Image 1: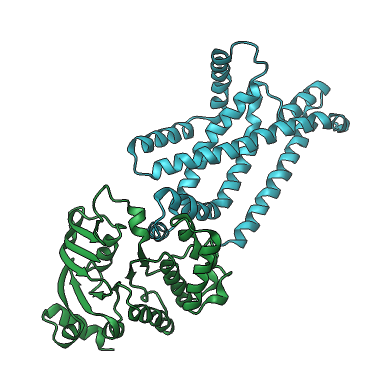
Image 2 (image 1 turned 180 degrees about the horizontal axis):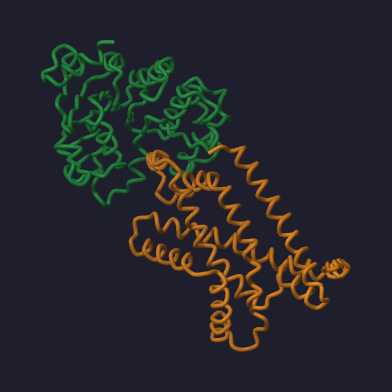
Length: 242
Length: 224
């Protein structure tokens, strides 16, 4: 579903991604972790071309992301993305947040889009909030709406960029629960997260990044059992300690 | 000691009202056109195209570096020639047209700077979220960024409108009878210049002060 081949990226002289290669099969759930500044968010944003890259190739469902002839809006409409800071549109109601993409990009009718939006809102347990504005919801609720907004586009895969790291601790689980359910239904997911409980529960593979490189790319049991690299061991010791 | 005599004001109200109409016409035309043209200039400056960006930057810097009164005079001297070349003689009084064009083009430079700052006040994550849904760059700008930008910059836009409203009095240099010009002419005619100018000043003050108070209340309602 997602093929990442030899991706390198520089900001001026500074290399943020160095020869990253991995893939996500259909129905697979991949967790990407690593210390801050390791390039994991940058890598996931390369997948739907929110970040350009200078070398390498990324294929999403066979379409090359870096090819200038690729219709990027069309490609992005098929790849759902959830952001660290939710990024709901604050000037639009929850209903409008859920329908804007469906109407403007997929050309669905307002009724059809609203119908779909309401069903997904119900699924994340927020049907009662449909007429509110984002600022009236808690962080956890906003992030669940953001997931529903992405799902409303019927994506072929979902990208999560640290979806819980801006949340208060008591709200993390309500978002993770939605993600776990999604994973169990067979959604293809690539998640940048430090939630190792989530990784253990649903991830097929864990990728560990450091200084722009993929240091480890292992099946989940292997990764938590015996990480091969010292950096990954140190990292795990630090974040699993508390 | 000057003996005040306010009697000539009452009789001049219809004339003054006509002058106020001209003032408001220029003000609103410059606001509407200035914001529209200013938005395009701002988007051009922030967009990737170097040619368009360079043109917009040059335009803004030019108009911000010359006095408004000169721009008004230039257009009074240039626009008639241009129109005559296009439509031939017999156009009638084009002073209002030239003033409208001058103010609109001049204000666009100021509005574009306000709008540029407004666009930059919208977090980049909002653009990413729009693009990630599959919206094009244009749609993201129109549907996501600009509505938020305009909400953020409403107080500044209104403050600029107040300044513009006062600056329209500069059309006296081309002999156009706006509110200020009319007050001046009436006062001059009746030998009551001091009274008329005091009265005109009071009217400007009441209007501008009310609007700026409204802006303050608006700001309190939508904290930045």
